[in-house]
Amino acid sequence: MRSALWLLALFGIAVAVALVAGNNQAVVTLFWPPHRVDISFNLLVLLLAGLWTLLYLALRAVSAVFSLPAEARRWRAQQKERAMYAAFMDALSHLMAGRFIRAAKLAQNALTQEKSLSQLAKTSRDVGSYSAGRATQLRLLAHLLAAESAQALQNKALRDEHLQQALETSTHRSAQETREGVQLRAAGWATDDRDPTAALALLNELPQGTARRTLALRIKLRATQQARQTPQALETARLLAKHRAFSPAAAQSLVRGLALELLRGAHDPAQLQAAWLSLDANERAMPELVIHAVSRLMALHGDADLARAWLLQVWEPVMQPRSEIGDNLRIKLIQVLEAGLASIDAAWLARIETAQQQRPRDANMQYLAGMACLKRQLWGKAQQLLSQAVPALQDAGLHRNAWRALALLAEQRGDEVAATQAYKRAAEV
Image 1 (spheres, rainbow, N blue to C red):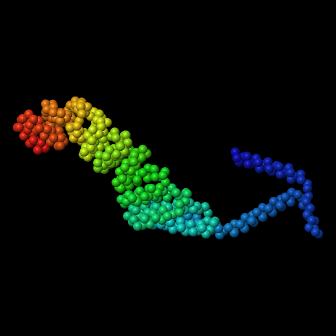
Image 2 (image 1 turned 30 degrees about the vertical axis):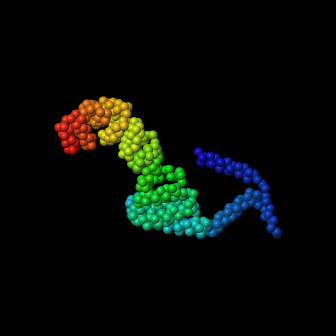
Image 3 (image 1 turned 90 degrees about the vertical axis):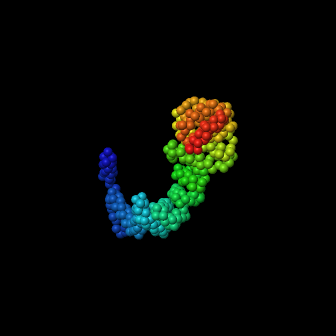
């Protein structure tokens, strides 16, 4: 369609020229003493148009001749730029393929080509579209490739040399993201070298937005764990879980492990209570954390009432008949409650009795109810519950304590034979 329209336009122009020039009888007289030249106006127009075209072509030819040196310089710069990018791409390919020595050599070649091209760009303004920002970005990436290769070869001196050169490269707006990437990789290398101080220092130099990226948070998590900065590691793990950097199960396991480490780091009840309050609501609702915190508080001779108050929020889920809590965790809970039975109140006794009735075949709960009855001097009920529990107890500590309790009950009845036999069985466990 476009070709047809152009053809119609050309026909129209031809018709218009024929109508104007065909009936034009004008004559132009040129006086050049002693000569006189008479020509038609149409011929004059044609001559002027030809002269203008010839002059234009001559000027273009002269311009092309004088621009040959600049074109030659531009061509050489283009070849250098192509060689530079080819070396860079080959270095990246070799690095991904695990050929680190070749990758390092090609990255150095790319740096040499870039340096030569930069010098050529400074001396000549007609090199082409070579951008200073792109040059800085490629220089940073080439240094990064060389440093990555050196890191893989465990050549730390060469790695640090390229890393320092990359970080000392003048910052350009278009290369800012690349510079941040170099800093992140340097922080990752520091964690690989078990140097968390250097890793955290590099991370602190990053802008706030970059420091909150998932990659930066992963590196920070490793660095804080290596530096034994458990509160900071826990906060970082929470951010990673919020960003969905891990699966829900893995995130929960990581947060739980760091919270357990935080609780284990407390050396007195005040520190433990502060650590407990630093956890968020979801973490304080985890049975593993609650039971461990209560156990730690009792081991530090803390307030038993406070321990039972912490334990109350997970008591019902743990004691449900179909609870998925493991036996080891439930045994630990029983041991914690057993340590504070001397100060237990009637409400807790009722809870223990209710839990034992809900789990009538659970030897561990029978043991706990029997020990609670023993502390309350309910000898008959304690004898009944402990006698039912002792054959099925799997934990050695509970088994031993149950036989000792039965020995005490036998001594209370005055049955020396039964007491001796119970002590003997406790010693055999």
